[in-house]
Amino acid sequence: MSDHATTLSPARRLALDILLDVGRRDAFARDVLNANTSLKNLDERDAGLTRRLVLGVTATSGCLDDFLQQCSDPKTRFSPRVRCALRIALFELLYLDAPANVAVSQGVELARSQSRGAAGLANAVLHRAASNRSSFREAEGVDPVHARIVSLARTSGTPVWLARIIEDSLGQDAARDVFASELTPAPVTFHLNPLTGDCAQGDGVGKGSLPGCIEPVDSAAYIRSGALGAYKAVASDASAQLIATSATRPGSCLEIGSGRGTKTFIMACQAYRAGWNRDHVAVDLYQEKCHMNAARLIDAGLPPARFAHGDARDLDAVLNEIDGETGAHVMFDTVLLDAPCSGTGTMRRHPEIPWRLAKQDIVRELPALQFDLLCAAASRVASAGELYYATCSIIYDENMAVVQRFLFSPLGSQFTLAPVSSSDIFDLPAFAQASTTIRDSENEIGCYASHPAPGKPDGHFCARLVRA
Image (cartoon, rainbow, N blue to C red; front, side, top):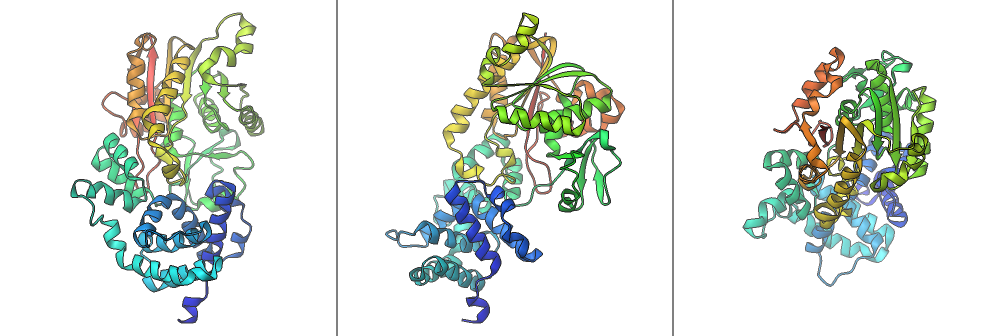
């Protein structure tokens, strides 16, 4: 072998170290990547390869294991460390179309670094993989009835059962967009704090169709500028910004599932731009997230909100203190339910999602929780008020199925669907173009339903329900 083939590249060595660390800690790959100090010591090209390998291997881990099994003797047992090393080489072969000699030789050295005795086995397995990668991707040998969807799943690194559900939910054309985008970077967009000046954007920053939404040409440089730390902006997907904007209305607002407060921040910014006064109550299951949300609003100089934490299926308990101040159930002009979901619209950003999900999560457990939360949220909508049901899922069972079930319930019969694009804020001239953007992704009954595609925002769903 040449020196090039036998010298393990620093990018691959660090990728393996990070992936092993992720496994030991059961952590999120992106969090471990961002916290790794060694990454800063690599040149830009090697650092980029390290990130690509860590996130890609995480996103396609199940497919890589299936391929490894096909290329190995059924009786072979790999240690977790050697398996992780081989996953990196297999990812390069399957998804980066790396030259076989490079992927194999580097994979052998990665395996050797974890167990000297594994080098021979790794060499045999990886040579077989290099010869069979096309047939695996094309699902050769699979029953022709299933070969097409299996090939799509393998090409995108997605579980076959999930690929089927995505296609059933979106149709073949839109699902093809999702599969094509799975292993591509998601666009990075920010929302500006108007109190720090919308024009203080820096060089190379382009405005979108939504006031406050920007997509820097060099997002890394924009982050390094300190804008996020100074609360001049928050990072948020463009589709998520559209939903937060649509739910921004005058009067009182109850936000359920506020998390760390990205939508809280955006709604406060958009209300300021619209010249509207609002009373905002933000609810989250976790008290520490409420504290983070409150602190960000204060540091950003935005109007404060009230916070409550607890299980929003029992809003009477969660809002007990607020209700006690008036001696009655407080009703709200606007309720935004940002429901817990599968996150399938954001898999590019969260590579753990495809292989941590279970089918029962999507078809049974999450829809049941979402329906219960939607009913609880609806109970706090004032007469003529509006209820927004939002997810970052692209799955029918979590979106339209939940809304339709709600509308057929006794409480839901008091609500009617209205187009998200006709929300009050889009009557303002500054927001008119955003309404057009929403209409481009509205379904036939006015629900916003975007899906990922290469270079496009994430997949989000929003239904707007008006109470009689």
